[in-house]
Length: 236
Image (tube, rainbow, N blue to C red; front, side):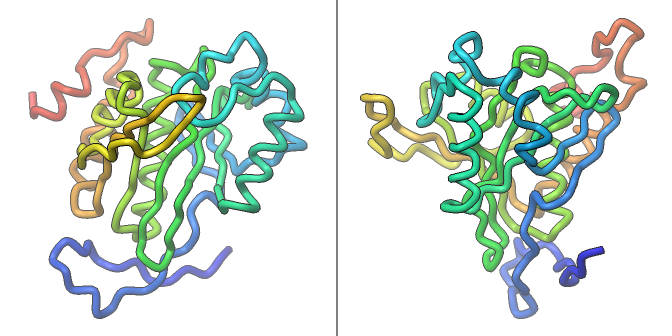
């Protein structure tokens, strides 16, 4: 078992006299009732992950991202390998808990252990994962992991025109921090980037709501939700 620094208390009061560098996220598997998130092992995950998010059939997954689509298995593997070595991404493969089949991927990016800050990005959900309970569980597991490690800040960024990504961030509980205008040139177009975050003092309440929504007794036998996430957030 890896030795870890003691987890600090929430830092919203501004006292960081006892602050310590936090461990790197994304180095261990994360288990939920429906999905298991595993650190990318290309030899083991590559073919299944490519089937979920690669190839011409899945090209639309990458429309709003600065990267992709990835037409071949090698292209996707080379890209994720490069991001690990050059930008220190820690890519998680989202697998079905029962079958082990890869359903999608997301990466911890812009990891700043000394500041306790990390970003979730390159979120690529295959057709079976999009708009599913499993997707919400995967995002909650990734958020919970960084805050369990004592991180102070968790970021989400997306193209300002990507309505689905902004809705997903807000649904989990990310707060919009504003717009970086003319932030990037991607795929021949100017991109304004919307910035979102969750900070450590906010996570316990957000986690309680997500846990309540994800509980098995909140879903009927046919998988339809009984209470909505928004209703739990509003205390109904």
